[in-house]
Image (cartoon, rainbow, N blue to C red; front, side, top):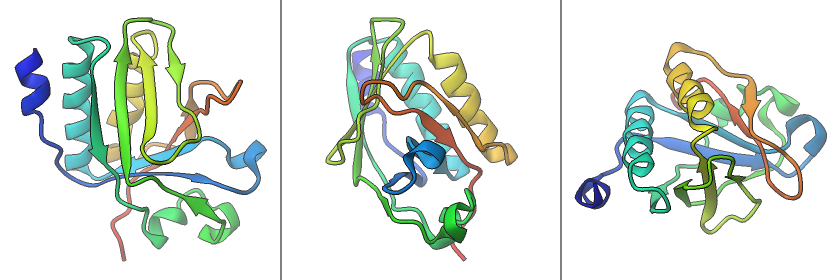
Length: 153
């Protein structure tokens, strides 16, 4: 699996951001991606699951103005920040969930008990599903919100 981990190549567009205002209503990380980006993330999760403790860094594309309107937070005009990179790791600790606020790179460590919900959320994006979150927002560990993809207009 080590060779699969090193040979994995990112495809598609993946957007990840968080709002800097109103954390009670719109707190946490927000994620959307085009179909190729979703397939790429799902493939990476499969590889990482078979190599617990390993990680890969992926490139993040800032969300388009149109994509920011999907959550309808201040009609897409709310202040936000986005990393340029995300370091993704599947932890050997099944209950791990660590998604702090840091930006460069953003770091997300997820345990195997959260993988089914994460995979379900990713698979729903191409079907237009979203507007819900998984994970926890306790002690600086932010939840992850899924949003359907809209191409830049």
